[in-house]
Image 1 (cartoon, helix red, strand yellow):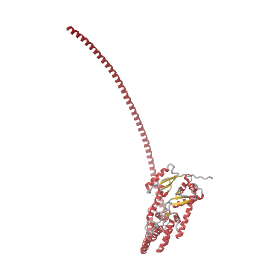
Image 2: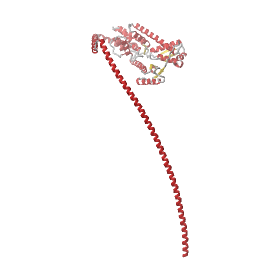
Image 3: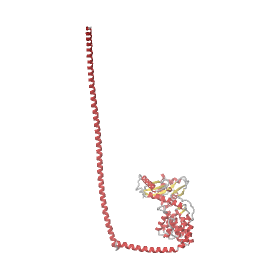
Image 4: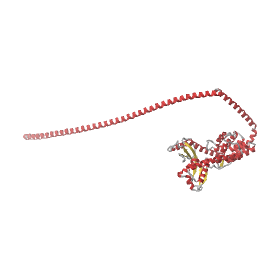
Length: 500
C-alpha cells in the first residue's frame, strides 16, 4: 500500500507538474497575445488620434481663412463707404459754398434794387415837385371830393326812389303775377348729322389708318361718329360753334372730293372765316329786328354766336329776340322804359356765347361782358337777375325774368342740371389745359372722353403715357362725375416746307 501510494503520488505529481507547466505556457501565450493585440490597438488609436487632430486642424485653418476673407471684405466695404461719405461731404461743402455765394449775390442785388428804388423815388419827387407824403395827401384829397359828389348823387337817388315807392309797389304786383308763368320744354341737342352721297364716302372720310378722321377731330375738337347709319355721319360735341365749323368743313370736303389732312386743315380755316362772317351778320340782323341800336361791335358778334347755341332744344338767339319783344310789350303796358327792357332782354343770355370758353355761370360771364363794354347798371342788373341769382333793382329787371320764363318755359331744376353739366365739361377741359405739356383739350362724348393735344416739343412719345396718367389722376382727385372718363392724349409733329 505504501509503495502503491508512493507510486500514485509520484504519478499524480508528474501529471500535476505537466498540467501546471502547460497552464503556465498557455497563460504566457495568452498574455503575449494580449500584449500584441493591445500594442496593435494602441497603434491604431494613435493613428486615429493623429488623423482626427489633423482634420480638426484643417477645419480650424479653413474657418480662420474664411473669417479672414470675410473681415477683408467688410473692411473693403467700410473703406468704400468712407470714401463715398467723403465725396458726399465734399459735394455738400461745395453746395453750401454755392448757396452762400448765391445768398451773398441776392443780398447785393437787393441792396442795389433798394438803392435804385430810392433813386427813382427821388427822381419822381424832383420831377413832380412833391414829396411822397405830399403826393399821398393830394390823392386822398381828390378822392375825398369824388366820394362826396357820388354820395350826394346817391342821396338824391334815394330821395327820388322814396317818392316813387307807391307807384312802383302797384307795378310790382302786376309784374309778379306775370313772372309766375312757366311751362315744360324739350332737351338740348348736342349732335349734328351730315348726309353723305354714298356709304363709300365713309371710308374716304376715315382715311388711311384713320388719319383723316383724326385730323378732323383734332382741328375742330368735335367727335366724328361713323356707324351703321346709312349715308350719314354724326358730329358730337357740346360746343355748337365748333360743331357747326366741323359740319361746314365736312360738307365742303364731300363736295370737293379731295380728303386728306392738308385739305382738311384748309377747309376748317375757310369754314371758321365763313362762320365769323355769319355770326356778325346774324348779330346785326337781331339788333335790327328788335330795334336796339348803338351796341358795341363785339356785343353784336357775341349775339351772332348765340345762333349756334341751343338751350333745351331752343335756339338761344331766337329766344333772346323773343324775350326782348315780350319785355318791350309788357313794359309798354306798364308804362316803363321799353328801350331798356328790349336792350336788357336781347342781352340777357349774352354769357352763353362764351360759357364754353370762360369759367363760371352764363349770368356771371354776362355781367363781366356787359361791364367790359360799358353797358349801364340797369341793363346789367336786368340781365343778372333773370334767373334769381341777383336781386332785381328795377321793374324792367322783373320783366326780363317774366319774359324769359314765357319764352323758354324751362323749370328751375332742369336749368340747374344743364348748368352743372356744362360747368363739369368746362372744368374737365380746364384740368387738362392746366397740365404741363398740354396745348389744347376737348371734352367729347358728352364728357365721357377728354381728347388732349400734347405739345410735341415738350412731351416725347415715351412721355405721353405718363401725361395721360397725370391728367386722369388730376380728374379723379378734383372732379366729380358719373361712370368713367377716357383720357386720350395725342402727340403730332408736323414739318412744312415749300418746293420753289
